[in-house]
Length: 193
Image (tube, rainbow, N blue to C red; front, side, top):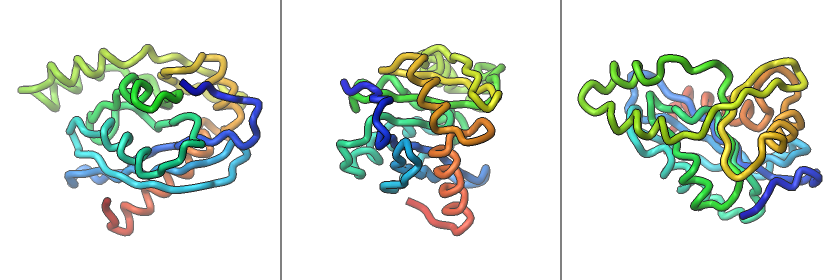
């Protein structure tokens, strides 16, 4: 298992975000490899089925396609993506052997009720996946914005240090902000992967 080496200026992470249209069947995932000093090193793309169960495997495939052993952590914008496609960060950590951090920006109340509403005949498996997620923890960034994280393979203190380093303003860490912009632009251009 590789730990977060927060003292390294060139610490590299894979930041993954998504974009989708409600009437489509898939979302677009964009991933960027960004160093802690904000230098972008690489890109990778993938997709996930809206309402499906393939987001975790899509991220594993994206990581493999990168073939970048210098990536030290994975940072994901949300762990419930693509209309309730739940990302299993424990599985990501177990397979990749590097820290995995999921970031969200709002309190997530009523997830179980939403799963029952959207998946009336199959919500049990979705709720089980949701309950497997690690506990959400609130962090107040140096920008005075609150965010929520779930993490595997790293301490909350290291996560807070890293996200403060990566957040220039507002609540969105720069690698995730760039990845979200890229995913949105790819979707607007009609590209798919």
